[in-house]
Length: 198
Image (tube, rainbow, N blue to C red; front, side):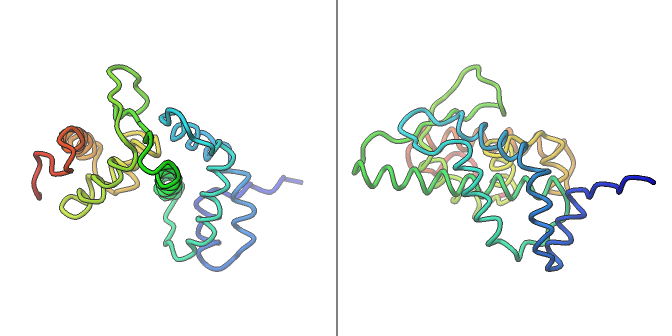
């Protein structure tokens, strides 16, 4: 007798979207390792003062995923793009809590480099990056999403292109210009950058 074919991530996401709560329980063991890798990449960029560990970040993102039952899940890449967004929110919330506790003390610094490349690291404040991304979202939403997926999610150019339903060349161009704008905005300290609306 043939063994049953294991369910795929996309199939389980569609079942969950259709209201099958048990699909999420079957999904998590399949994606858990990748969520941990995603969380490790996010936390690797944290410098010091962070009390949140990999498991805690995954668990907090999971809780937010459970509450995001209105998402129209498309596929595996879309799932991890949303997970990256949720992890960004968790990290920003944690940084805000730390800042409030320290009343303006040392802020979290991250390296805004080319996805997982450690050369020429430039350290930036996580809260300032989040604020700059929110400003970018207003005039260049796709660029903001590219940064979120590449920087926070560690998605490849191809995965980001698939999640956004655009070509890899568009993602490369938007990643390059978004990074330049963000670096200028963060250096200026006012979030205005040099790039205007598209």
